[in-house]
Amino acid sequence: MSLFAFILGREYKLSLAELIHVFGQSNLRDFNEEIAIFELEKLDSKAILALGGTTRIIQIVRETTLESFATDAIEILSQKEKNSKFSFALASFGAKFPLADIGMRVKKTLAKNFSVRLLNVKNENIHSAVFKREKLAKTGTEISLIHIAEKNYLGFSLACQDIDAYSRRDTAKNRDMVTGMMPPKLVQMMINFLSKNAQKNGVYDPFCGLGTTLIEAVNHGITTVFGSDISPEMVANSEESLTNFIAEEKKWQERIRTAGGTPQKDFSNLVAKVFPLDATIIEKAFIDEKNPKNINIISEGYLGRIMRKEEMTQDIVFSERRAISRLYEKFFQSLARAKFSGEIVMSFPFWKVQNVYVFLENISEIVEQNGFKIESLLPRELELNTKNGSLLYRRESQNVGREIIKIVKK
Image (cartoon, rainbow, N blue to C red):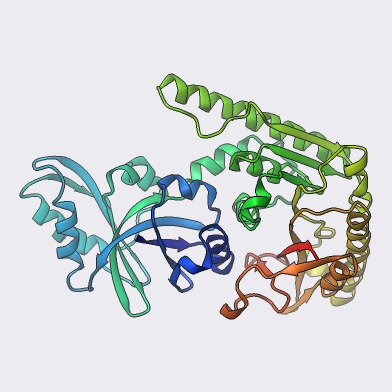
């Protein structure tokens, strides 16, 4: 068994919940708002491609101290073949550390036996683009200091979140600048909140919009993907976005085969369908469109009409909340009539009005009345969820946030 440090994203609670769903709570050894430590038998460096909430994965080698970190880093890097040439970087998480200054000392010592280049030009961690360009995941030459719970660890980075991969998937989308877009990283996390056995049953997004959920599900390796939307224009957007993404992915797969590799994804058995449908009569998806009743729903539900900050008053938000509640009453009533049995991970809106947060408070009641229940996204004993077991996603500049809720059949 080995220790691995996962560097958490901005919404650390969601990041931690994702890791617990993927690796299990029993393997969690420690965590704070920046770092989670898991003890695992092994970990493929490609694991980060499926994790939306992790920015770096580091394999821990040993405990260290602030004073001995430089010496320990030299010892690790000195295991390279004598007189070899390589680039290296230092990183620190959970503690401020003069990385460039210490790095120059490490470089001076290594230069006696190696041709080395230090990538830290400032006393801060290098950007993910530099990590990727310099192939540090392959060389294992980003050495990290991890400070957590009064302990210091030394490790080497296995992987860094691939911003370019998100950009490639994003450019495949047929853009609509009026409609808000579900953040792809958040969709990845929501997919990972499904139980492992459930994932094989596929993903259905009944508010598919621009197709972000469909693209992320296919990219995750899910081979049954359905989407629907009340707007024919959004259906067309989703269809085009998904088609563009698959076409681009097939090009990448062909390049990998030409280079003698084996692509990770296989679209030969992919079943994908997008169709127009009002989500308040979602039962028709299981009757007319033959959606399997045990498929999983991953979706950003309707967040309400777009409002400027200056027009958001409590009266207007309360009126919007009542309208959205009526929509979801019909949505879950229709799911119940369809005898839907899959898992549901959805985002519901909450609003910030004059420094007061307004939630869709009756969503748990609506869910319960229709034969479903909310499942806590994080273990209750960690005391990090909201009172109904949900987690929140909101940027500071946004007036409308997303409450992420997992719902299962009673």
